[in-house]
Picture 1 (cartoon, rainbow, N blue to C red):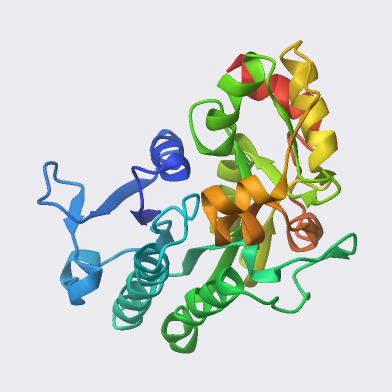
Picture 2: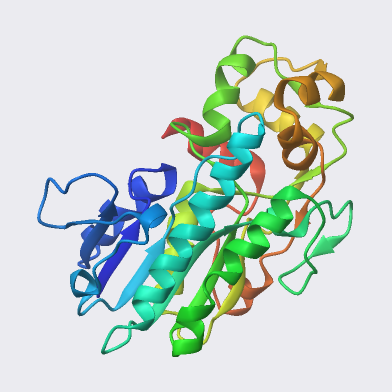
Amino acid sequence: MKIVVSGGSGLIGSALVPHLRAAGHELRQLVRRDPTTPDEIRWDPARGQLDPADLAGVDAAVHLSGASVSRRWTQASRRTIRESRVESTTLLAETLATLTPLPKVFLSGSAVGFYGDTGERTIDEDGPRGDGFLADVVGDWEAATHPAMTAGIRVCRLRTGIVLARRGGALRLQLPIFKAGLGGRLGNGRQYTSWITLEDEIAAITFLLGADGVSGAVNLVAPNPVTNADFTKALAAALHRPAFAAVPPIALKLALDGFAEEGLLIGQRLSPRVLTDAGFTFRHPDLPEALHSVLKS
């Protein structure tokens, strides 16, 4: 397949691009700077600039662009978080919709933040949108794919959970603390965390490129979510370190504002029903083994 990818320098994209190339696909990457290689295409989502001619003949698009939400949510950062997702998705979806022939599939990044706080309930892709800034952003982000869907392109919205990778994401930030024996649960630790290894994330995206019968929302999470307390214990055990500390909610809220309340202290117990019903098999369905695999990589 000829595939165009955005966000190729991020945690997921930097692993996906070489994986797809190794599988024999022809890759094009969207970049915001001047291209330095023949496979790069310049675009500017803020200005609505993307030449449709540069996407001619594309069979698929994988859209992974978006500013990190793991930061203090100031007014400026909230605007960046929203605009980086909605503007880029709108531009790419509208451009793909003009192509002849149409691409077969558009896999557009999304997030489990769509569901808000689900407490202890197990929720699949039919779950309703939750409340809060992040849920609203994800709702707008997903709605921006509609031009592609209306044009007849198969669209999958990739609602990704916490991606476990040694060299990036949340785990990279946690490792130094846990290795020092200072790790601990967040708040009371009873909130559920829906996670996935980077290896399974890449495998799921690759699977969905060819899963012609799958469209709409897809939860990219392992089938066995855990509480934050259990995650803390598993990570400490994998590193052979104690983890007796607890970070009080007030400290998280003072440091991270809304991200603490909507990203760290809420529970999301999610099911990857669409993936499993389609026949996808997780390489790392259980957290202890997943952490062991990630940490030795």
